[in-house]
Length: 452
Image (cartoon, rainbow, N blue to C red; front, side, top):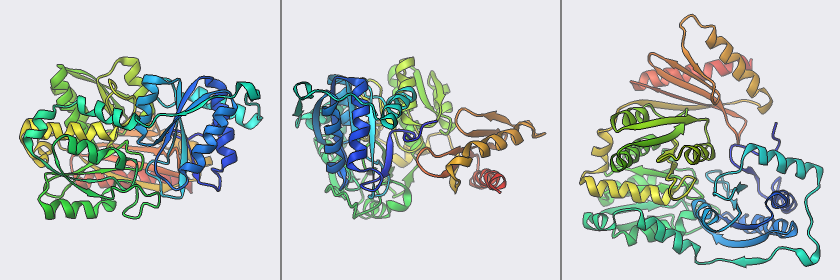
């Protein structure tokens, strides 16, 4: 069992557990395995320079060449690695509060490294046996400051710029003081949008709002969209790999709705294709695929798992229900910039407001809850829940791909342990808000039952 890595990378409180010594030691273990050219970039957290310099020192010590990409979105680092380098390290805690930071390692395709490689890194880390290059074989250090502009240009090339410019859309973008500040406003202006900005100055204290783009954190964005008559509001998380939309009426649009919207467009453009998502994603994704010659393949929760499956199956498109969409012909990871550009393109091509486009999608209702659970009890609680459901006389369908997913005639509920926190997350979906809430509460009650 892994001792350091969570769902994707290692996240800890900066300069408390995630110290310079920890970061250097961990990255030297990664560098020992890669032995090549490694790109490093990060988000604008206050601790990122500290952690990044420590990571680069560890890599150089192991004999790797290091290319410092600066502060930029996670998908921009993944783009760079896929096209130019042997590996990459991203310094980010994504949507976590400002006191956290993290280290994400990616392979030569820009995909989060495998479980097997994480275990090898941990073995080197705990046994303290990384490669240490001699003074004459230390890695070389360089920078690549133009990468952000290249990434922006690549996003622009993947949408119909003329159609977007002709639509003359007003867009409010809330970068949450994160890495999207370096890309989102510039891309939107290049697309000919009238752009209003919120929290678009990078600031690792995240003074405007919490970096996670959930509805409670986007009240200011919602009000600005309504008061300015904007066509669309866009919100990004700390490292700019997720996009959440606010429609022209000020309604918060769930991530699985934008997933379905982009899925529908891409399947039409390509006359079908393989869609990859997780077991926690809406049934609407299956409905859209069935209507448009698509095939859905599911994985456990985690964007790197979706990305790996997209590569393996040569998939068309993938993503998660949290606003993280993956365009595998560009980046093998969630990409906020291309997600936003594609959603704007759909509005422009269809000549319909976002609220109308969303209303045309299959309708399901969802509920999300969470409950605390010590990490050492998670597996036991899951097993006990799975045992109970498998013996239930009602013969519910059971899926244990990730946690426990219970499929009933009314809908489904998934109870899964967080990979980054001592909690269980409980997602449900049904044909009415009341049923969805009841199913989520049922899921929480099952965890409570076995915690006692």
